[in-house]
Image: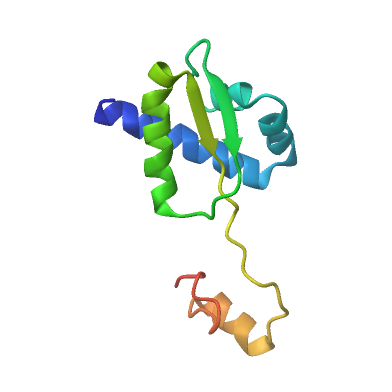
Length: 117
């Protein structure tokens, strides 16, 4: 796969995963017909290829590399494993007035390192 093809695939794959995370309709489509979901995001599955969805992985940069390898091997193996990692979740809690002020000011909140400022 050329670098432009990798970039296009990575972009479509990332968009598909984000859609599944944020839209219940896209999540249903993933369960019903992952080929259609991928096609909606510009990814064509080779004819005769079985698509297997793997939802057991945490979100990590390595997942994209593994997904690209699976995509590259699909035409030969006849199997595409579609990795849809679990979305990262942080613990929901009420913020104090000072923490809310810090967020609005762009300072951040202690204990929420995943909210960069």
